[in-house]
Image (cartoon, rainbow, N blue to C red; front, side):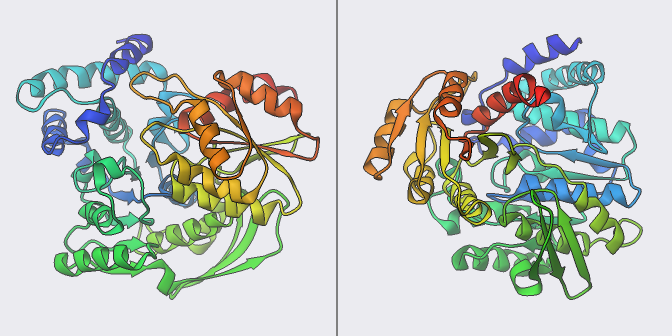
Length: 438
């Protein structure tokens, strides 16, 4: 199968919003992988779940493991520029020809399980591709980011060396539940007997749920909040330096990523790596070296142009609050112009609220993605008005971005945020049309 044919096949599978509600969806993933020879069991894994920060944490984990000399697979979602980003080895996405070949193999396996279990989804197919690619390339270890929740997520076929729940916030409530306890209960489905669980969950009721699940499973419970301290240090202008102290060691971290919330993600990654046994566990030097080279596109990614431009995916209230706090801390004397699109299923008011409280102006827009629906920009502008902020509605995202840049002062910062699809779209446009010429 060619890469173009593989992409066309995948587009025909987009129906995740229905599939995620099906109680038998993990059975389907198990059946699909069984036909494919259970490639996910061919190498050690780290399983990373959580509401926010799991993509950044997974990327830091992979960077440190790679710096220790290991061949490292990394599966994160969503992708930004290309679907091939879903399966990376040592930071390099799978080649398009190999991608097409594996999708062809998975399609044959999917045909064999469809009658009994239903057709594997877009997400499940790409996850199976990552598992196959990592097995075929003889990776030493793979870091796997969960999709939605934990208990019935397709990644919960893993028996990892360490499991992670970065934190618990109110997101995907239509699937996982309306309270911290319900969401934590679903995410705690990644807990496995005897396998360490590392978490930075601080909301008390959610933490109790996870801690209880660990106790019942006989899984060691490692709280990042209880077992680490973070000490900021002077550092680079567009990054941050800090020291993480754990019961095991002291790490001097230079992280080329903005956002103070990334310090907690780094501490979570370090405590996770400390749970690995030799020869998988990286040394302190490897962790420090790997973190120093970590790049997370679309997460507090700043371009110091005039006006400055920052891309950050903040599609739920927890992420939005973290981003607003990071903007306040990192750019205390700057004015912000937000370019925002939000998925229809999201809590738009609570996503917009932290930015309205921080101050600045808004340009609301939309995105066009098969199987996904954006909130109308006019509705978002109305919500902003109710929060005491001013915003205009522009349907075309590139036009919205251009208007924001045109009307901004040279010292302002354009913040492209909200939906992953908006950030991916405008970041790709920016890299092709502006960043390459700067």
